[in-house]
Image (tube, rainbow, N blue to C red; front, side, top):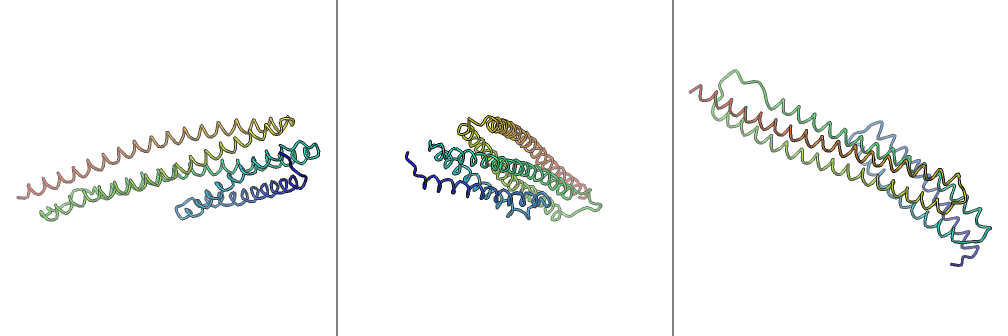
Length: 263
C-alpha cells in the first residue's frame, strides 16, 4: 500500500501520542495499586473497578498501537526505518512497564481473593460460636424452646445465603483476575509482533523473547495457585456447613431432653 510522507508523519505522530497515553495510564494505575495495597478493604471497591477499566482500556490502546506500528513498517522507504525502529523501541519499553503494572494488579487481585476467603471463614466460625451457647441453667418453656430451634434453623439458612453471596463475590474477583491474566497474554502477543518487526535489532529481540517467556510462566503459576486456593475454600465451606448443621441438631436435642425431663 502506497503511503505518502504526510501519511507516514501522521501515522508516526499517532503512535507517539498513544505511547504517551499508555505511559500516563501506567503512572495512574501505579498510584491506584499503591492505594489498594495501603488500605485493601471493600471501601476501595470503586478504586478497584476504576483500575480494571483503565487497565482494559490501556490494553486495547496497546493493541491499536501495535497495528499502527505494523502499518508503518509496511513502508519500505529507508528514510522511515530510523523512525520506525525508534518508535518500536519506545513502544517496547513502555509495554514492559505496563506489563509490570499488570503483574502487580493481578497479584493484588489474588491477594484480595485470599483475604476475602479468610474473612468469610473467620466470620462464619465467630457466628457459629455465638449461636451455640452453653446449656441454660434453667428449664425453658415449650415456647422458648421452639423459638430457639427455629432461630437456629433460620440462622443456618441466613448463613448459607450469606455464604452464597460471598462465593459470588469471590467468583467475580476470580473472573477479574482471569481477565487480567488474559490481558497479560495479549501483551505477550504484541511483544511477539514487535519481535518480527525489529528482527534486525538482535538485542531488542532477545529482551522481548525473555519478557514473553517470563510472563507465560508467571500467568501459569498464578492460575495454578488460584485453582488450589479455590479447592481448599470449597472444602472448608462444606466442613463449616456440616459443623453448623450438627451443632443446631445437637442444640435441638438438648433442649428437647431438658423439656421432657422437666415434665
